[in-house]
Length: 126
Length: 140
Ligand code: HEM
Image 1 (tube, protein in one colour):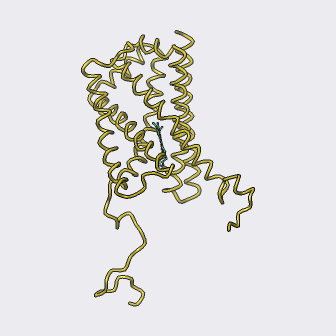
Image 2: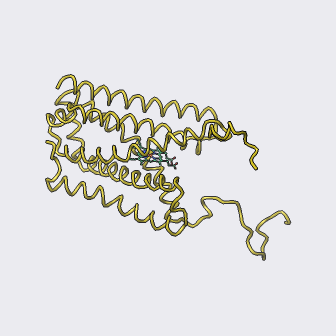
Image 3: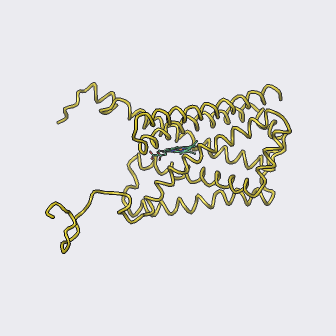
């Protein structure tokens, strides 16, 4: 017998109302990163030796630009969720947790802004 | 004395689990390595952003990036990222398999940990061999 109400069970959120969705976001973003990570490795190897114009040509193709943007955005999303688990595990003062989570988000935002700006600029100019 | 769980002359009593009291197993090392490579890949995202931004800014910033990337230290760092991505991807797949409920018994978990460690070095080594033997650069 379960003391759980049927509504609570279908919501599937457990007792804290948020941990399960964090778990799922980390898994789903991780699963998306499997094909994107392989595509990324194949692409970088294909650009090894790195002539400037070839790199621009490569990323100005819509499919490559879009896949790279997806790799960056999903990786950073997955990174912020992952860093939250790490911070929750090792940092025990509430203030420290907040400061580090803000720092993690600021870092992800900065990396994302630079990368996406660069991809748009390459697509625009080339 | 009665409160001391480790009275002399008696069989040692079990203590609550703690990292320092466990003999390391492949699965334990594999778990912490997944965490370290995850954080390391996060730093790698900054290098990726720098590379893309340099390409967007023009030939000189791009040449500066390349001149640093081809130094021995640059190559070691790039190999580190390639290894971290391989490791984290393989161990990540295994995490998802665990989440489906498979592979939990200690023997197979330890065996797969060793397989993942081995493959995680072979994959980036293969990529670097291809690049250094001129088999990379197929998009140039
Ligand atoms: C390439 C495909 C990837 C897969 C399949 C994958 C999969 C996973 C999974 C399943 C977890 C959860 C592990 C746990 O709960 O202990 C995780 C954690 C994590 N991932 Fe990824 N990931 C990938 C790529 C990345 C990338 C590119 C980054 C960095 C930008 C990253 C950073 C992290 C971090 C920081 C954690 C938290 C580590 C921890 O809690 O121990 N991952 N990953």
